[in-house]
Image 1 (tube, rainbow, N blue to C red):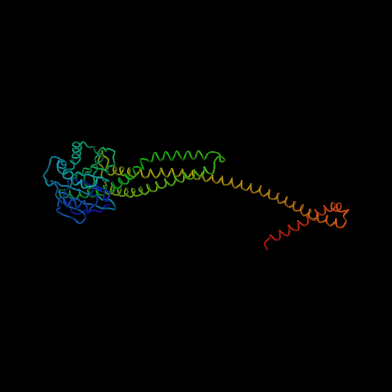
Image 2 (image 1 turned 90 degrees about the horizontal axis):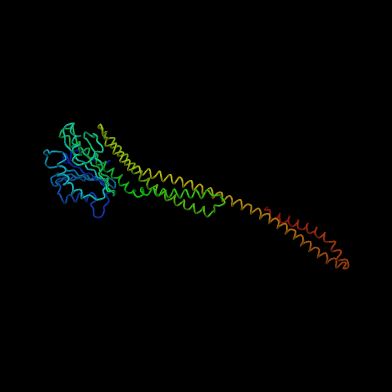
Length: 438
C-alpha cells in the first residue's frame, strides 16, 4: 500500500478529487515523470506552499488546489484535489463542482500523459443529517443521467460508485466515478474523514492501474488464445491420428518430423505459459493488497444495494482471471503434447527394437554363412594338402618303380587324405593355443 500521512488535511474539505495512475517512464511529448509534472505546476501557478513529499498547494481559477505525487516502483500516482474559495452554501452539493471545480481541474488533467492506467474521480457532497446522504446521491444521478453501481458506508462516509460510462472499445484507463458524502460528523471532523478515504482511493487507484496495465499488455495474446488453441488442438489430433496407423507403416523419418514439430510447439507454449504465469503472479500480489484494503474498510451495507468492496473485488478479480485461464489452457495443451511425445518415443523404441532384432537375425545368418564358408575352406585345405602329398608320392614312386607309379599313387590317395586331415587338425589346435592369451 502507498504510504500516506494522515496528519492535518492540506486544503480542508475538498469538493473534487482526481486520482490518476500511469507508468512513470518518460515518453515523447508528455509529462510523465514526477519532477516534470510538479515543475510545470510551479512554472504556471506559483504555489503558495511546497512540501518536501512531492506535494504543492496553489490557487487555480476559483479553487484552491492541492497536488501530490506518489511514486512506487515504476508507477506514478497523482492526486489532484480542489476546494472552492467560496464556502457559502449552494443549491446542491454538486452544482458548484460542475460549474467551477471541473473547469479548474481541466488544465491540471492536461499535464498528465494520455496513456493513463487508471483514473478515479471523487465528488464530495456535504450534509449534516443521517437521512440526507442517500437523497443527495439520488439527486446527482437524476441530474447527470448516471446509474448507481454500488453503495455502502466506509469510514463514516456514504460511498457510491457509478456505473462505467460507455467505451468506444479502444484501450482506456480503468475509470471510476465515486460520490462521497460524509455524515454524522462535526464540521471540523469532516475533512479528516474525507482525506482518509481519499488516501485509500490513492492506493486503490494504483492497484487498479497496475492490474489494468498488466491486462492491456497481454490483451493481444488473450484475444488470440482461442484461435491458437483451436489450431494447436487440431494439429495434435492430426498427429495422434497418424500415430494410430500400423507400426510397420510408420517410417523413422516421419516420426522424426513429428518429433521436431511437437518439440517446436512445446517450446513455444512453454514460453507463453512462463511469461503469462509471471504476470499472473504479479497480478495476484496486487489483488491480495486490494482485498486487504477492502477488508480494512469493514464496509457497512445498505438495504437494496451491493457494497462497493464486493463489486470492486469482483471487478479486480475479473482483470486477473484471464491470466490464470490462459495458463491453465496452455498447460492443458502442453499435457497433450507430452502425450504425443510419449507416443512418438514409444514408436521410436518399437522401431529401434525391430531394427535390433533384424540386425541380430542378419548377424546370425551371416555367422552361419561364415561357418559354412570356413568349413568349405577347411575341406579345400585338406584337398590341397592331400593333392600336394599325392603329387610328392607320385614323384617318389616314379623314381622308385616307374612302371608301378600310377598304381601306387592311386593306392596312396586315401592315405594322403588321412595324413592331410591329421595335419590340418594339428595345425588348427596349434593356432587355437596361440590365440588363447596366457
